[in-house]
Amino acid sequence: MLLLMFSLTLVSASYLPHKQNTELNFSITSNFATSCELTTINSPTGIILIEQTDTSIGTFNFNVLGGNFSNLGTYCMNIVCTDGDKITSGQECRDVTSSGEVYNQSQLSIILGQGIIIALFAGLAFSFSKEKWKIRGFFFTLALLFGLMMLNSIRVMAGIGETLNTMADSGVIIGIIAVSFMAIYLLIYYTIEVIHYFKNKKEMKWQVSENPI
Image (cartoon, rainbow, N blue to C red; front, side):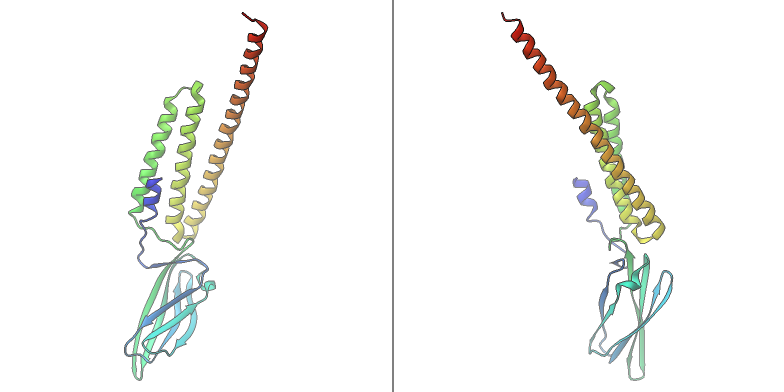
């Protein structure tokens, strides 16, 4: 769990992250401009025409509706500022992801660590014989649980690409189903074990009462 919490703190991006299909408000500062215009947006699928002008002094505010960020990838807002005959252009870029977060390559070490923990729990499970199925099943469940965590980490990392995001989401769903089946399997066997325990205890009690000393 500490490893999982640590992995959630390693967030960085080449551009500021933004969540898919949500509204974006941003501002730029210019000491000389009398007006700034958001002209177009370079999106992963092409150029989006905006034409939004702000005539504030010093700080210029812009608002882009969430519908413009329907695809995953990098978006760059093209801005042109003017002061009389002086014209300056620039860009404000965002990495649009499904979760609003972008993880860098250092996150791969966390996924590797989670993989090692999965291998450890799986190895412990196989070290017990089938007769000790309760302990064996417990370690298998832990391995599946950490596998689900690892799949979720991969899903977040893959959130900047449509195809990878879809594949990662499918992997998380399969992982949830696998963990659920394992948990149900163990619950059924634990319940049967408890029933047999109380049944045997009751039979022993009757045998003792029928054969008094």
